Length: 102
Image (cartoon, rainbow, N blue to C red):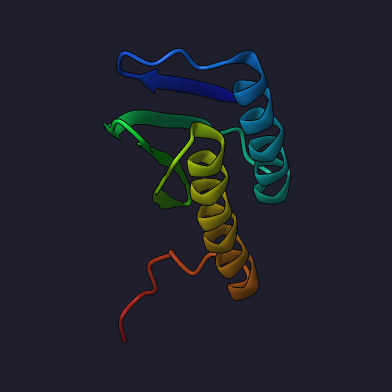
């Protein structure tokens, strides 16, 4: 798995990165696909941070969340992505194939 962390004028701790990597590892195992994930952090105001997560695995997965600290923002965004992956898994195999017309 490749993870690109982007944080404008923010220091992202190793503990935060490890937490995110662990949760994304579970998503990667569930999808059975190597992921390239882009995670952006920004400070919205003096007391609010945002986190956005994006990756593509058969479909585009995007989530954004804001909170009063980086850990909460990341956890919330990752929870949203996990729900998206869960909904995709419930649908079964991909039906993206083109069917011939009659």
